[in-house]
Length: 234
Length: 291
Ligand SMILES: Nc1ncnc2c1ncn2[C@@H]1O[C@H](COP(=O)(O)OP(=O)(O)OP(=O)(O)O)[C@@H](O)[C@H]1O
Ligand SMILES: [Mg+2]
Image 1 (tube, rainbow over the protein chains, first blue to last red):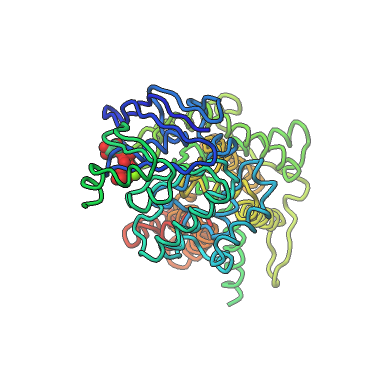
Image 2: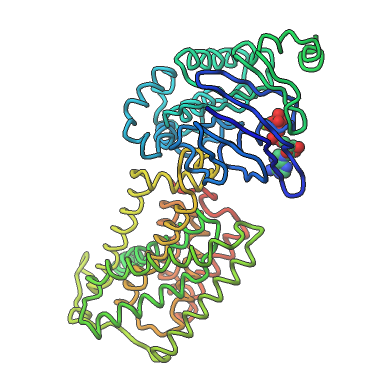
């Protein structure tokens, strides 16, 4: 479904990705793990069209999407729940969600999509008129996930959805990811919480300084001695 | 007491015009973080367009409003695509964009001198001297019409921003352009549209001004400065703020006749600006974004 090949990305003169490569097949949950500054966010931003790519290719459902304007991703079926939520704080929860289905193909299904996300996050239903910026961190993450779903994506990418949240909320977020995966959504998950991420994922990639250093079934990575020592402190 | 009421009504009528004049500048700054120094030039050019339509084609200035606004919308979009798009934004790019847009203003002004000379012009319709009585005082019909049209314009804009998908996209881009791209908003298109709408509002202000004042190619500099005062007073880009900023300015100007000689009232706005910048640099309402 998604294939990233040999990707180089620069911030000014500093190279953030060195030949990044990964693949996500339809219906899979794939996780991308790695230390701070490894290039996980940069990879997701490049796939989303927010970051210019210097070299390499990104294909989605067989078609190259590199070089196409960022705002066309949503129409293609790619959605990102960005790191740090990135809501529109002075817009209401409902407006945040409505804008999630801004793309023409998604707008037709506005009511259906709203019903679906309210079913997933009943709390948001009671808060539609509240300003997004006045919600708690956990609630904001729910809005961000709900907004990401409003475009009816076929590939949903999460960038550190558990960042800065209380343990109870983290458990809820992962429960939602599990549920979406069960319903057949294809997911690319970036997480610092390596253990939780590898538990929900089918496959995983380990990123170090802009390229993949290890890949394999999530279960194998979870029991890998090197990973346990480096990332789990075991 | 009677005189106070009469002056207060005058101030409210004037505030309507001020709000429509400042809205375009505030909208463009709020969304693009670019101070459109050409705003005053656009107001002047639009006053001339209204004058030409009236004197050559016999089109009533109020009926000319839709035509003028469409023309200025197109001009604004073209100006964005051909010029403003390439400018650095925000604090870092401030000087470049100020200089360039100031240059645009000079060009517009000199073209106006070439085409129309420096003579004062005015749009005089059959009802230019008609008046209306409000609470026993009479006001010129034009001033009342200008007030009503300004209110309608600001209300329509507000509804557009708060109710329509496109309006919501404009607000979304203002707050977070990255997230806007993610949900499929073409951010560049929103910028062009906003510049077009802001310029169309300058066009509206120009037509309205042409019915109230005599003008020449230097017209618009006072209007630009007053627009600054209003958005600084009111906070950038908030509708309520702009309305209040316009009221504060018009009341200050009109009631200043009690305290300063009449030839100094024009300076009142700028004194107000300096005071606010010193006391509350974020404006009376803080730098709230579009709501
Ligand atoms: N806007 C930017 N300008 C310059 N350098 C950047 C920028 N964003 C990221 N970088 C650099 O690119 C590299 C990769 O950053 P990236 O944000 O992709 O890492 P990450 O894996 O998501 O890290 P984290 O786990 O901290 O979120 C880092 O060295 C970072 O310093
Ligand atoms: Mg990151």
